[in-house]
Image 1: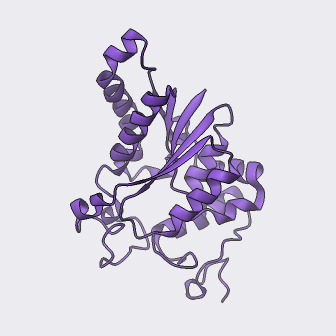
Image 2: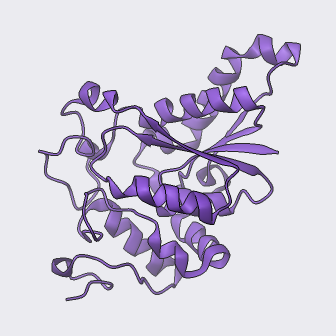
Length: 231
């Protein structure tokens, strides 16, 4: 069985990959003008760690211009919130990513398109199960004739969220499968040598380790005052 996984190189996508052990994984990472440059390198590293059948980094950098100042993840001039704010939401980002991933899935006969949304992603509309289910229906409707003719396989759009899995639960499974390598996954929204420890994503990462009851060995910037900082 084959699965195409939208793979950012962050904690969620890396841990989601460990839950797809029954599948041959084809990872797809998007360069869309995000401020978090290190996640691309992390995705490349973990593609090897996870023995993916194939991993592609797809350049959709033109999206940065289209997004303009609509969100803080692609606008380097915007201040980065330390807690959820709707400015963090990149317009229908998962719809874009999952549609491209599905095109690859249909092309290689994969049964699943997966991404790392979990129950803590409730504030993000394109992470919710209702969105994934609706998109699955739309994608298969777009290939219904090929599916009927037997030249395409129907795809399932899946995320841990759809099975009620939290970020902490994901993390426990990822740590069990990969050990301390998991600390190399990149979560921070900001470019840099270390996790900033201040953005919403870094704070969610810290909270997930606490929820999971696992020591957080992530290196955070000294000024953050976080558990893994060197201050």
